[in-house]
Length: 135
Image (tube, rainbow, N blue to C red; front, side):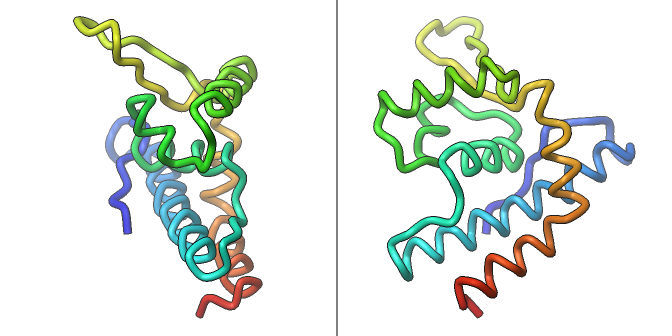
């Protein structure tokens, strides 16, 4: 199981608590999806969902690490990234000192996703687990 490292609000703030809860649930969902892929060859989560959940867990990632969260080709990944960026669900920033590296992180419009996961994520994880018969 991956260790949560959420997008970072001040310690002990209400926002930070919500982000930590959502990151924990995101970890569970990705682990369930990985197990489902291993058992059946099919995924329950879309590539966009897997990327957003991965960003929720890690805060930000290098672009090539983010690519590994999805089953997409390099070209399809960049098309998806462009659409998510246009919707302000993610941000892409260069790394100072190395123009080859770009980092991706959650954008300003990702807050509702975080709140939804924090409020309803355990029920969602249980439904995915039960429907896939993963117990």
